[in-house]
Length: 254
Image 1 (tube, rainbow, N blue to C red):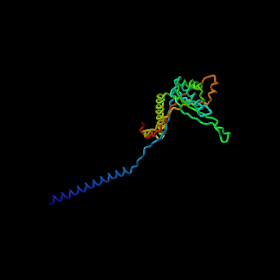
Image 2 (cartoon, rainbow, N blue to C red):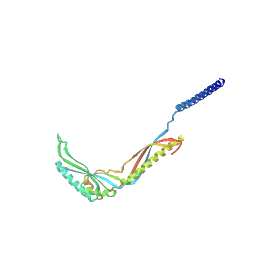
Image 3 (spheres, one colour):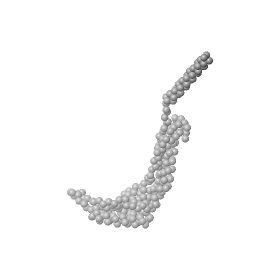
Image 4 (tube, helix red, strand yellow):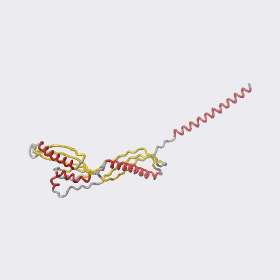
């Protein structure tokens, strides 16, 4: 009986010590968990920057828009007169190997004498607008040819580059825009002893071709009096792009 009692007492002491140890461990884990929960979450520092880039390249072709306007006592008379000149313009453009020849618009409107009360119709005007493309060097001769066939006005000339060349240039401009944004971000972060550590998002905006020449509107009859042909100087086309980038700043640089 004595041996059994001693062992029972020892067993109770071991159990008590084990419970105490477990209790201390639980308290320690609880303290650590509380510390983890209580630790503040510091958000990453971000910076939004917009960079820009551009690439210039020579223009290759010209898109020309001309208009024909003819008057007549009736709408049919006006339209027939305008159609005759339109057919002549189409023929000369075909001989010049012009491309993308198309009729942009056709309209007929009445002309009024507003001195009468009520206003009276004095005739009709028919107008046709045509656009076509030539090489940049062929723009002047094409305009002269259209004038010789009786167009009423030259509305616009738009210069553009070969699509594949422009696509390459605009992609290069986009690359320059991203690099510009990265440089700006690093310059801004340097005083804070930080640098760009990651890229959160990139939004690219690539511009379409924009080289444009707007000639002064003039009547063909006045242009025919000029001894020299139409001279057009084609400029360069500029491919532009912008990049809106959100950077994450830190101490480990890209």
